[in-house]
Image (cartoon, rainbow, N blue to C red; front, side, top):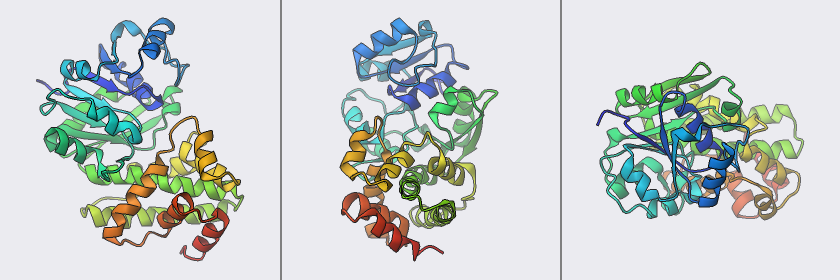
Amino acid sequence: MEFPGKIAVMGGGSWATALAKLLLRNCETVEWYMRRDDRIEEFKREGHNPAYLTDVEFDTSRIFFSSDINEVCRNCDTLLLATPSPYFKDHAAKINVDISQKAVVSAIKGIVPDENMLVTDYMAQKFGIARDNLLVISGPCHAEEIALDRISYLTIGCHNLQRSKDFAKCISSKNSHTITSTDVDGIEYAAVLKNVYAIAAGIIHGMKRGDNFLAMLVSNAIREMERFVHAVSPRPRQICDSVYLGDLLVTSYSRFSRNHNFGSMIGKGYSVKAARMEMEQTAEGYYGTKCIHDINQRRQVDMPILDTVYDILYRGVPAYRAISALSDKLK
């Protein structure tokens, strides 16, 4: 099979929809796994995703939809994973066909809950997929801006750099620029951490603590990210590259950032439970905070921002008290 072969989009949310839009600019057809048949039927009828990015029109004659995950896995050579991380494990548990020879591209910006594993590590362990067949997509690339056809920058990571380059051709366009990398672990961990820091940024915004404080938080966050990522995956990397710093900035500041908006509600006085109930989409940083905190119990990296967010989300420490304590630790 010549990589990437037939590609399947796995997931029905905004990120999956944006990636499908990019793929269909360069691929004749895609298969698309969505778990709900009613959404599939409405998509076919209306010509757009009925629940997410509804302004993005599709030629559905070029899409083969299915709610059978095993059918899609059998039919396709490359599986593009774009489900929220909290639900990924449940979807993966439904796969009972051999996918060990498939290529898997993870666009999931999160860790597998309960396992505290990167998605690529989980896929390698559970399904026996070779490292050279595991790729990741990340970068400062909100699905909403891709849908608006704004200039975006995506980084594709793989231990096999040629694979990164080959897949990059599938999602590149005039306004979708691609960068390739071999730093798979660093990209995945950074994608989790930037959501945690975006929650902190949102809390500060919601508390009206000001732009000066917010800038200080973000400058400390990128150094905290660098410390942790180097501890778990020591190798040369430029932390100011777009896939690290760029993604942190856009997630911390953008009105499209669900993690920032989640944190902002907490900063305004919502309880964590109420803020979660108010969110229409998943704030992955909520789950990522606990996963990274658990991992760091072994690593013992100095991570005051992570610890502060964990205290607020999981220990019930009032936001004003936790943020005031954090302000004395920033440098």
